[in-house]
Image (cartoon, rainbow, N blue to C red; front, top):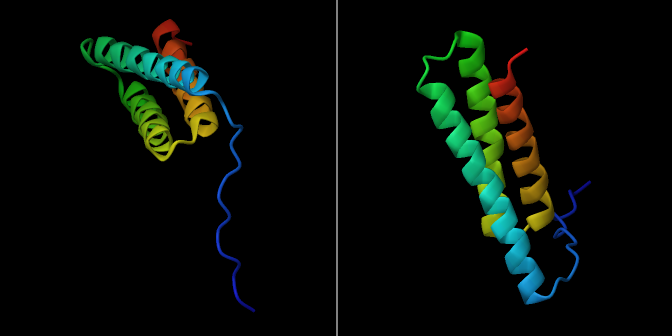
Length: 93
């Protein structure tokens, strides 16, 4: 039994301008995540916050990777997750 080769992801075909706007929106969310993490890191985060920061960074890094691969759907979902977690960390419990 041989494994099937990985199939490429199916992405909706977007006009160039719409794709550019989507990429800019994702990049803007990731920039906001970076700003929030800088703000939190400046105030001596707790161990629990440090764990959350690492999780947020992993989501953000994966989002950057997906953008580089041209997978805007996955990049957007990861950026949204990173931003939601970062905003939750700022608000606190």
